[in-house]
Length: 125
Image 1 (cartoon, rainbow, N blue to C red):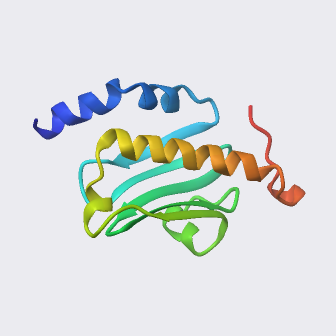
Image 2 (cartoon, rainbow, N blue to C red):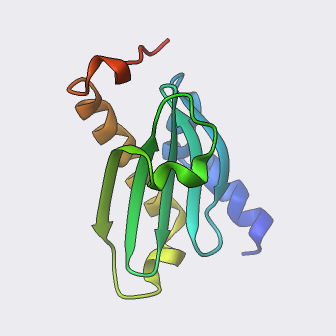
């Protein structure tokens, strides 16, 4: 399967359709077919990155209002990382696995966001 066919397959998955329909999530860019697997997004007003490479994956959520997604690993309000498999498996994880893990990481952020100081209590539309 070539890359355009793989991307079409990605967009047809149920999990991608759920993410795309989420009113609090804007996917800015996605590189699911190369290492590192990555998704840059705005999540309920927070800049966020899901990134997977080598042996691990991680989701990082930055300070509200920041527009520099690359720096959110330095100014995080939320961070979730986990081991995936021997290197370089995480950088080439299957498309649906990538989306399912990202979806669960997004849900984890939303669960703990209510415990954050009021400065970070941004309301969802």
